[in-house]
Length: 253
Image 1 (cartoon, helix red, strand yellow):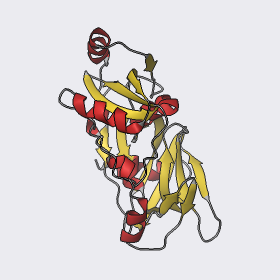
Image 2 (cartoon, one colour):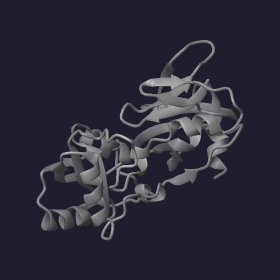
Image 3 (cartoon, helix red, strand yellow):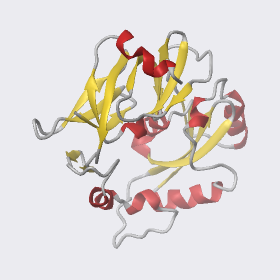
Image 4 (cartoon, helix red, strand yellow):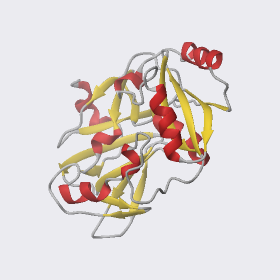
């Protein structure tokens, strides 16, 4: 099986068993994780909702699949680069709050706002404007980037504490259209998780505490570990049952 992605909301890894079967398979990691990583190759690409597998050894995505995956809308900064504008749905401009007090600005299609904020691992999110298309929303986002970043580092999302300070700042300074709160972990984090960097042959196991954006947090013998789920893309993997058999790999960190 090759890891091709993940769903933080569904708490699942997406794997491809091609050529044995077509289409991705979801591996539930909501309760625990127990797997061993193999060699790494191309994770393939997505054509809409369809995954297109690839046998290249280039990781995590080969040049061919990477070129196919480029979408000008992802890089938009308020000036459409397409021959024909396609972002004609209503778009939301939002401010996302993260512990211990960080604020991020972003854009989402209006109907997808809640899912977008959850995927990013926001502790809270606030829609501050709704505009007729994506280009207009990106223009407003650009004007706010002098105040707030439009990206949040992986490590920043692992901070302990609350986002109350950031939430208060947003509520005091903006007319909020919609507010959303999120709980990503089954219990409060009692320490800052130790970040694991995956590699060939690594065994990863532990009880899942939660998934915050791309950050999977697991517990092993009272210690918390975090794994960037993006960093698993392209790895072949083997499932291993039980938590004890994978214990040594985590204890080396």
